Length: 302
Image 1 (tube, rainbow, N blue to C red):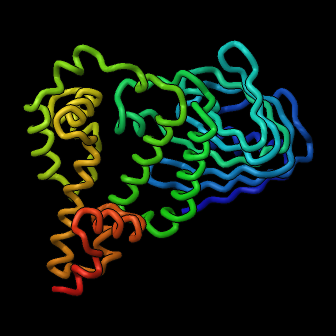
Image 2: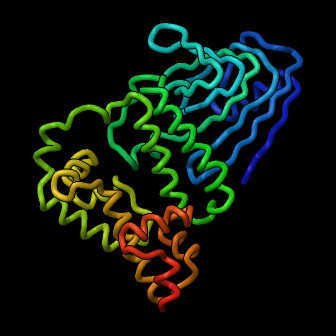
Image 3: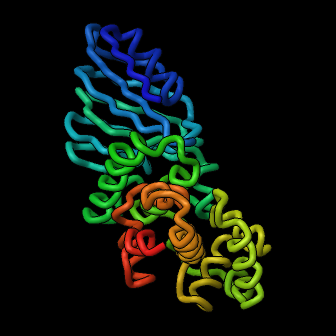
């Protein structure tokens, strides 16, 4: 569901922005602004588009969620690591990690924002700490922008009511974010991780995955079932199966989709969505790589 709010008064802008992000206290601002905020939810993730003509400086309470963004025009600035950070047109940024006092200034911002909580991150990686507000590289920033646009423009309009597709989309977003911004998951494996990454861990995880492939399970769920940390389960799969836990889950789901195709249990598009694929073209490419024929060929042969 999409929500659109248009503001033409500074008090209205203050109220809407405080409700959307954190309680703000405006120090200065244009008395006759025009501002538009479009918001849409994808599970627990919110996609915002902010546009208009407004200038303000504000202080705010600590954020209770991560706010990542892509500024398409205008300017933003905020304090980080003891100095002011200026966000220019086409920059990708993390506004401020949760729990820290928030300050921001803006001039005519046109921006796409993505908002999600620590609980969303915890489903992909444990004990995450973001160490920087700027992307690791221009290529990483471009990949993050592309992923956000794909989810907002292609996945949301079609699959927002498909829980498995939504869950996969959210994990893709978080994984891409972790690959884009400096964070603690980029550190080396610990001694405990290496100790726990043994074959018994993999066997417990594989059993859990195969028994629950039709459900919305995360790498955190897999790690809990195997009784180890997320980092240990990732290392165990890399060490013994040369893949990630989620890659193994995708392989199991692809096998289930193959069974549905052979049983003619729906159309190719229906079966792809049932097993977590938002784009039939991606499903077809993965299926052909695994089975040597297209999904439609398998379906027609039944």
